[in-house]
Every structure is written in C-alpha cells, then in structure tokens.
Amino acid sequence: MIEIAAVLAGSVQRWEEFGVILALLLVNGGVSYWHESKADQAIEALKKEMAMNARVIRDGKQKTIPAKTLVPGDIVLLRIGDVSPADVKLLQEQHT
View 1 (cartoon, rainbow, N blue to C red):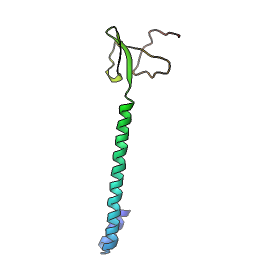
View 2: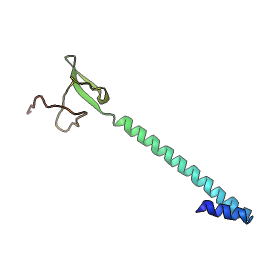
View 3: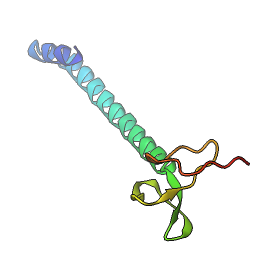
C-alpha cells in the first residue's frame, strides 16, 4: 500500500511527499533486512550449539561422535534422559 502511495504521489508530482514515502520505504527495507540477517545468525548459532552427539561403541572403544556420522553397527549408549540420535534397537537394559 505504501508503494502505491509513492506511485500516486509521484504521478501527481508531489515530490516532497514522494521523497518522504520513498525514504520510509528504504528505511523499512533496511530494518527488515537487518532483522532477517540477525534472525538467520541466531538460528545458525542455535544449530551449532544443539548439534547432537552420540556416545557409541565403535571398533571396541567408547567414543563420542557427531550423531550424523552414525553408521549401521554402531552401538549407541543411552542413559535416562538422553535423546536417541537415530533409530536404535534395544540390546540390553541396565537398572542402576
């Protein structure tokens, strides 16, 4: 709607109003771009912080690896409250 107002102000040669409307449009666009950029940066930071790791037994050794590198045959070690990093089959349950 503001764009239409700018076109109308320009078409009737009301240059002061056209300039103000155009300036507001540019400021609004700049602020929107800045907010979008900040939101994208925040999302990327959250993704990095929340990258899931998995405790596994691989090659007979216990390791902590990025969950995205899990392969069939890895034995995933889970504790109460852990989030399963993949579809797993329960091999053994221990009560401690």
